[in-house]
Image 1 (cartoon, rainbow, N blue to C red):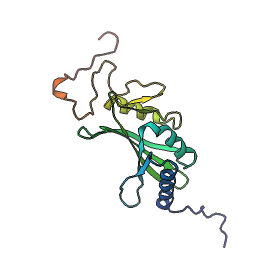
Image 2: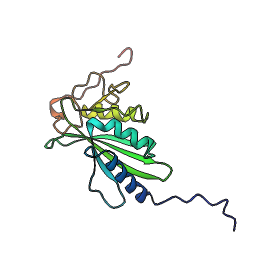
Image 3: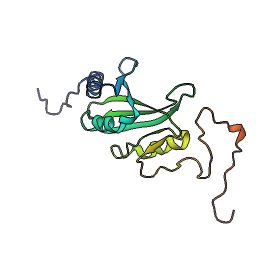
Image 4: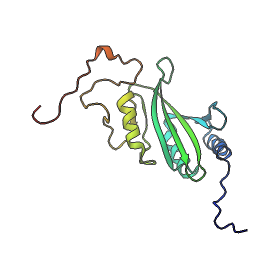
Length: 175
């Protein structure tokens, strides 16, 4: 039987992701912890002060070369109030891991990971624009969805649309 045209066998992504979770928790004790998650999913929490170091390890040692998504979440009655949630993918397996980085402060801040995953650039700008999360070391942390003169952060749960008139200024010449 000719096996040269057969695709390479890929291990079970959930097993490989579980091994990665165990490895990252062991590598960063007290900084990374496993979170409860549905079967077949892997979720870890990372201390914001160590996020850049853990991200570099996940990329270089864990094999997660692709940042699929990064977003902000507002939990107004919890500390830390905000989460930065990243979904990372190992395209070779294709294992996935979700990383939750709790951030607080005024403004809430976390290290930028654009130097590790360049695709984080726009995701971080969106989280900044919508939630006010500052990504330290970001190359161009400016608004991406809202006009530059917009005040406030529309996806914060304490943002009141009723007190801010929704008006856009024409930026076209002659208007």
